[in-house]
Structure formats: structure tokens, C-alpha cells
Image (cartoon, rainbow, N blue to C red; front, top):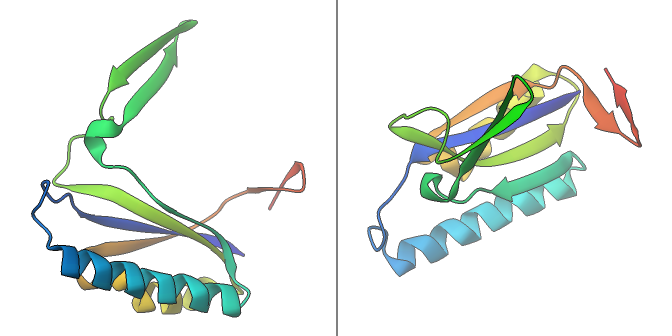
Length: 123
């Protein structure tokens, strides 16, 4: 069963985080990613650009609307995502608890309703 581990956190300002802390977090997330790979559960992982680099597209009445920034304005932003394929929600929660992002933000565990695998949608 696939789950998205959605990492939410406050977006730091330029220079707000020390280079040493950035290096420490890169190492922690690298170790986490390798642990997911070693366990054979990692499907995908992405660190997302900050909100100011976001573009939102909507299609209404046949017309595309393109605007800068995220659709919703919130204090915390979606910072990254891990997609894992595990037996059940408890296993997904177990991996979320090990995520370095849970130390300073939150990790939302959301089951995939359907997944596109090998050219087709599957449940």
C-alpha cells in the first residue's frame, strides 16, 4: 500500500539557518532516504522549492489561470515528500516517526487512493 509522507515546516528566510545545520540536516535526510531504500519501501523522494518559487495553475471554463505562489497562504508550507510502499498505515507511521523533518515540522501520513504504476491506475 502506498503512502505519501508529506513534510510541512516553516519556511526559513535566506541565511536564517546556519551552514552547519544545513549540512547536518542533509546528512540526516540522506541517512533516512538510504534506510527507506535499504528496506525496499522507497518509491520517490523530493525536496520542494520554497513557496515564492511556486506557480499555481487552474483551469476554469476552458481557460487556464496561472498565478505566482501557492494556492493557500499558510504559516507552514509543504517542504518535501516521500512516497513509500508499505504493508499498512502503522508501517507508514513508523517511517514518519523516523523522519528528521518531524523534529522541527510535521509529517502528514496520507494513503494513496490510487497509484499510477506501469502505465495504469491501480488501487
